[in-house]
Image (cartoon, rainbow, N blue to C red; front, side):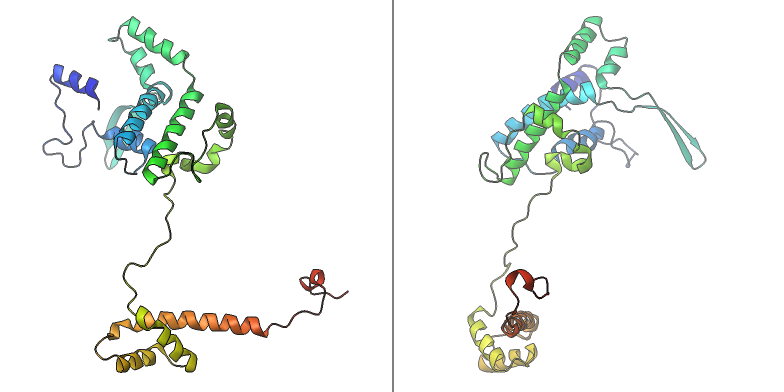
Amino acid sequence: MNETVKDYCTQYGIELTRCRPYRKNDQAWVEQKNGAVVRRAIGYRRYEGLEAARLLAKFYSAFRLYVNFYQPSFKLLSKARDGGRIIKRYHTPATPQQRVHDDRRVTESAKADLLKERVFRDPIELLRSIRQLQEELVNLSDGIVPGSHGAPDAVTLEKFLAGLKTAWENGPVIRPTHRRKASGPRGRRRPDPVEAVTAELMGWFAEEPWKTGRRLLERLQTTYPDKYQPGLIRTIQRRITGWRAQAADTLYAASEDPSPLPPDRAAMGTEM
C-alpha cells in the first residue's frame, strides 16, 4: 500500500479492509504481498529511528523498480473444485510492467515511458544497490558501525557480478537481511548464590574429593544455618563436576612423560 493506491481507492469508492464479514480465513488482497515481497526483502529485524526510515525509503525506491520491472509472478486464472480436489490454473508468468503493457486501459504514452525506463535501467546494478542497502539496514539494526571491525566493505559492481556465479549455493542466505544475528556470549541471568562460599567449598572438596554434592551442601547448611536452601543442590553438583574435570586434567598432564624421541619423530611415534 502507498499513497497512490490509497488515493485511487478513495476516488473510486474501493473499500480497504483486512477481512470481510463471514470469511474468517481471509486476508483480502491488501496483505497478500507482505510476506511474498516485503518480508523476503527486509527480513524480520527491528528498524527504529530516522536513519532507519531514510534507509528504508531509499531501499523501497530501488526495490519497487526491481519487483515491477524484473520479477515475474503468477496470477490466478481460474479455480474449480472437483470433489475434494481443487484445480487451479494460472496466467503465463509476467512482470507487473508487462501486465500494464498488455492492459488496454493504459495509454500508449504511459506504456512507452515504462518501457523506456526498463530498457535503459541496469538490473544488475539495481540488484547490487538493493543488496548494499540491505547490508546497511542489517548493520544499523545489529549496531555495527560502518568502517569498524566486522563491518563489510562496499561491493563493487564487478565483484558483485562475479559473485553471482556461486550465489545460488548459499540459498536464501544470499540476502543480508536473512543472515542470523550473531549472538554474544550468554552471561549469568541471576547472582551467583554460592559466590561468597565458593573458596570454602573448593577447600572442602580438595580435602575430601569423594564427597557428593549433597554432602557438601549439608555441611554448608550446618556451617551457615538458615542461609542456603536445599534447592542449591544442582548448583553445587555442577560446580563439583567442573572441579573434578579440572583435577583430572591436572593429573593427566602431570602423568605424561616426555618422549625420548626427537620432536619431529615424537608426533609420528617412530624412532630414528
